[in-house]
Length: 370
Image (cartoon, rainbow, N blue to C red; front, side, top):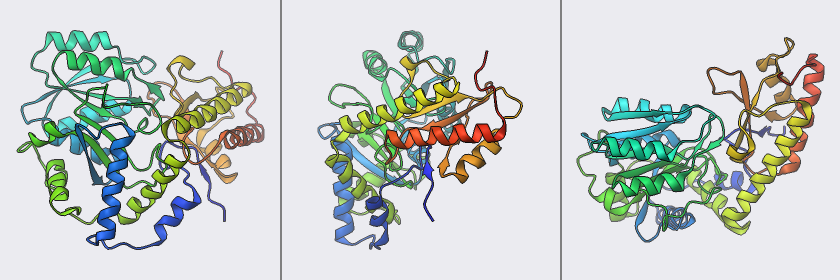
């Protein structure tokens, strides 16, 4: 049986070599596994040129685990976090802060609107009690890319700390720790590095992490404790995701051999172009204009035809070998198609052809909105 192609923002389709890496078992305290962990952390730092002032702290769990751990470790109990909100993952940060008992200030934007650095500037000037800004770089709910460099400069100008959710951008969209100031950058194994899900990681400014003692609300999610234990022993504190890490090591090796970030971005950009041009030829309209679209995941308006039903459309496309992603918007009926993973533009072209066939079978004649 052939695995379906995952046109999702993670989990995503992985290479045969990455899958093969999970066929071996590892002792979690063994020196070979400790060396594997250390090598992965070194490379994760190097991808954003963070070796000078930052450290890499891996954490068991999905990317959201790492987001929560970063917020809970680096934001003090009396901290106040500005959250520029233009999508569902920004809202998730706000929800996490509520669970943590940290005060959040929400700076609302439209879902088709990139975060406005001038509004962040004004909010920080108006409220000196704000200690941190938590910013999603690429909002996976829509595919919009926020202007991280300008935001980082403004946060630094005001002397506040920046925490970046780079879940869907790390490894594909340029981020350079030497020129972009941040206290934490958060990502995960199963995104643009094309590993498998199960491990998050935080690229943390060393000085910010070292002064975070006493902030932690949870032993398991305390990044400072995790980092200090790893520094002392080379080991994870608790049972690590051994197979996930082994797969990530191989995925990073492929990433570097294929040309690193530049090549990964070029392939995803080609994937996105093939997808969007093909879907527009069928009559689909993208939720975002091209100028705001990151080449990670694309949101499309659902056809207005009464013969269209997403669940049926999804099932039929899945039966032909492609897994789509439902919409994440509340006010607009949409679905999403990912451009990332171990796939090329030819895969997206085939997926568009399959979707065209399915629409004809379903009797959907009207795809475009007026």
